[in-house]
Amino acid sequence: MVIHPDIASSVINKRWVDELGKHPEKYEVRLLHQLYPDGKIDVAAEQKLIEQYDKIVFQFPFYWFNCPPLFKQWLDEVLTYGWAYGSKSGYKVAGKKIALALSVGIDEHEYRSEAKYKYTLAELIRPFELTFEYVKADYRPFFAYYGIELNSEKDWIERSVPMYMKFLEELS
Image (cartoon, rainbow, N blue to C red; front, side):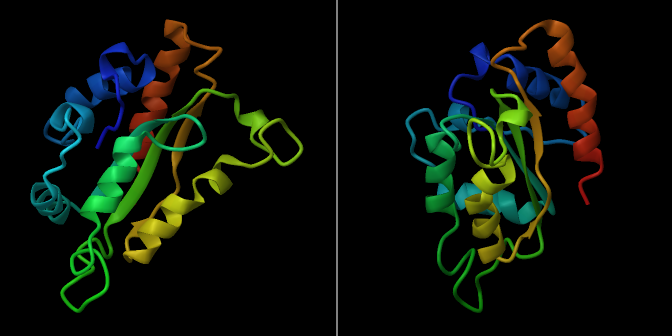
């Protein structure tokens, strides 16, 4: 699932989506902002889709030390009591491999306790880890490609593609 508020203007997320589109037999790519431009999420459809897959990757740009707002809304509305947690009929996400794929504007070395941003990326995305553990999903290590803010040349972007595809192939 791709959560990017302006995928047409994106540099790296758009490139990843284009690459995934070359493999429709392997990947179903859902562009959340295109599906729900008005922000009205079809919860039943999203839940039904999640139930169909064993591996789910949420791809988004990491900015303001968080996810795009539509992803937070998706989490709030789709992961409902009785479906995702809290009852005997719940836990429909249980056991599913869930991972995040992030494009990150800042260089990786800036995400350390002694650096500018004080925290590692793993620490900053801990709420996602806890959310997916709460619904008993199998939260997997994340993929991050750092430094887009200062490195937007084509060669640098292209280097990310095989790394991202390898991450997806090895998601286990």
